[in-house]
Length: 197
Image (cartoon, rainbow, N blue to C red):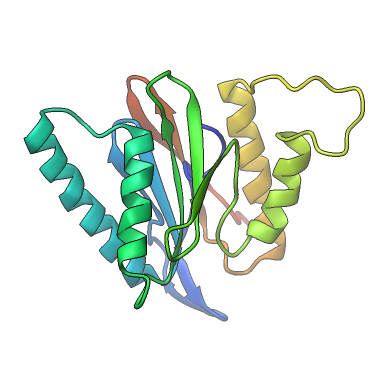
């Protein structure tokens, strides 16, 4: 299972109190084992996703297999770095499964610097969600607790709780939550309504 990260996304775009769209995805399945989440300027995120899709298609035709998640992470870094003088205004998270079957999350800045992590939040509510993940997933500032891998059900429950809480404080968090569940067999998507009041 991939770590908590880019397999979760809020849906919708807004500008202040104006809602531009009720459904504008910010996470995209790139391969059967990798999902990209892109926050920031929506058009740049879509352009980047399209560019990566082209490169992945070329790779598949040349090698007759999908690119691995670590290789995809490096390709994304290179793609962002090549545009460093006129960068994509997009803050990306890449989640997936590596060759050993372990979940990985990579976080990026707009010019391609990246690092692997176990979990990461991005987007307008990241300042609200990241401390919650630090406590519940990273077990930061807790004494006498044993770090163990999360079960799938626990990871999904934590994701739902994080975004349900974020919608109470962040007006930019959208109406829906899409959780991309990445398994060896492929990617499935679970959609949950937020802001039911």
